[in-house]
Length: 95
Image (cartoon, rainbow, N blue to C red; front, side, top):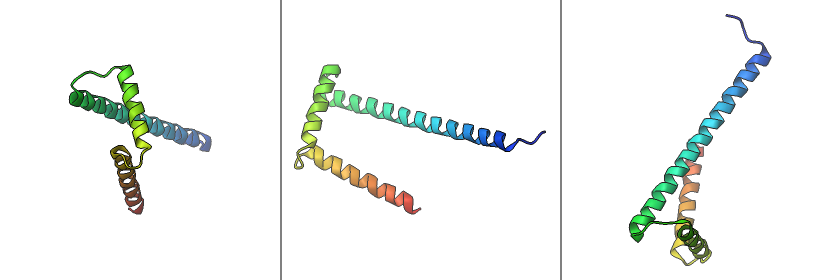
């Protein structure tokens, strides 16, 4: 077996990095798709009817507007979730 030149080793490792980044991107996309499907399914189950593009846009606009009001449940929920995510990130960084 022949030894690789430094240039070949660099190219090999760059390819490995590219593959790892692609796998991470794929994992994130799949997780996002799963989250979106689960969220839409939960909304439809609670509402008792199917969402369509128009309803989804109206619901998104309502939530975005409600999130601007600091006293709303949506704003408080988002703030609590962000705080929990920050705490988790800090804890992971401390490991």
